[in-house]
Image 1 (cartoon, rainbow over the protein chains, first blue to last red):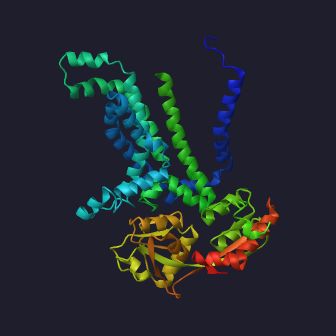
Image 2 (image 1 turned 180 degrees about the horizontal axis):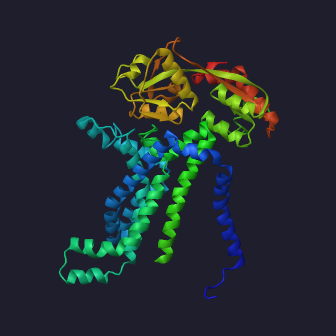
Image 3 (image 1 turned 90 degrees about the vertical axis):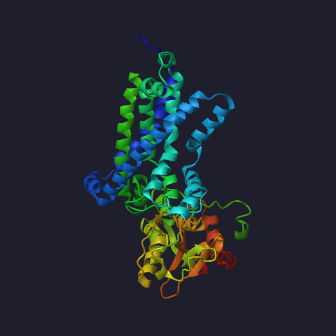
Length: 260
Length: 203
C-alpha cells in the first residue's frame, strides 16, 4: 500500500460523519411514495416550480460569474486590511441566516429601500415579488461560493505566465482574457457548480425578498415547503428530484477535484 | 405549582410556528405536552391520529382584518378594494389557516384578488405590509393590534370569518400535571384577559 493507513478511531469518526449524511438520505428514499413519483413529476405544479428553479439558478450563476470573477480578481490583488474587509464582506452572505439576507435585500431594493425607492419613484419599478427578485436573492446567497473558489484558484496560480505575456507586450485586458482566464478554468468551473447547487436549494432569502407565487417566485424549495404542509408525499418527491440533481452535480464535481 | 407562576419559573417552554408546521411536527412524532392551534382543522388532524388526551377546548377566537400602511394612504375601505389594480396585495398561502380564512372572506365579499405573494406564515404578510412592500394584506385582528407598525381596516361581520383556536393536552405528555394547569390557566379569567389584551376574543 502506498498510502498511509487511517488510524482506527479516525475511521470510526469518518463513518459516523458519513452516516449523518446517509441516514436522512436513506429515510427520504425509503419513505418515498415511488408509485407517485411519475404523476408528481409531471404534475403542473412540479414542472412549473422545477422550470422556474432551473431558470433562476442558472441566471443567478451567470450573474455570479459576470460579477464574481472580477471580484475574486480584485480580492486576490489586495493585501492587509483592505483584503480582510473585502473578504469579510464577500463571505458575509455565507454566514448570514438567509432570512436576514432577505430582509436586508428588502431594505435595499424594496419600494422603500435604499436603492429601490429611487427606482420606484423614477420608473415605477418594483423588484420584490418578481422573478428578478428570486434571481437576486439566489445570487446574493450563492455568489460567495464562486468568489471563494476563484480566489483560491488565483492565489495558487503560477504568475510567471502572466509576467511573460506582459513582457511580450500584452495589455492588462489581453493578459486576463488570454492567460489568466484559461488557467483559472478548473477553479471557475468548480466554483460555478457549487454556486449553482447553492442557488438551487435557496429558500430563506427567496421567501423573504421575493415572496411565494407559483410560476413567478415559487422555486422548488418553496414548493417543497408548501407541499409539506398539505401533502407530504409531494414534498418528498420534490425533495428527491432536487436531491438527484444536486447529487449529480456533486458527483460530477468530484471527478474535477480528484482529476486535478 | 400554581398556574400563574408558570411563566416566572420558566417551567413553560413555548414553540411557536404556523399551525400546519406544529401539526406535522406532532404527526412525525415530536414530543410535547400541549398543542394550541389557530384552526380546528389541524387540531382534528392531530386528534384523528390519536395523539390527543381528552377533548380539545376552544380558548380564543380571532377575526380577520385588512392590514394597511399607517394612515391608510391608499384609502382601502374593504375587501372589494383589494382587487384594485394599483395595489400590491399579499395573502397567506391557503395551506396556512390565515390564508384559508382569507379565501373564505374574499369569497363572501365576492372579491377576486391577484395576490403578489402567498406567504407561508401570516407574519410574512404582516411584515411585508409593515415594510411598505405590500399595500395591503389580510391578517388577524390580533396581528394588527400587537404589530404597532400597521393600521387595520375592519372587515364587516357579514364578510368576516371567525377563527376558533383550540387547545389540548397531548397523549403521553411528559409533564401531565403542568400541562393540565397550563391549559386551566389559559382558560381562566386571568389567561383570557391576557389574550383579550393581545387582540383575541374570549372563548
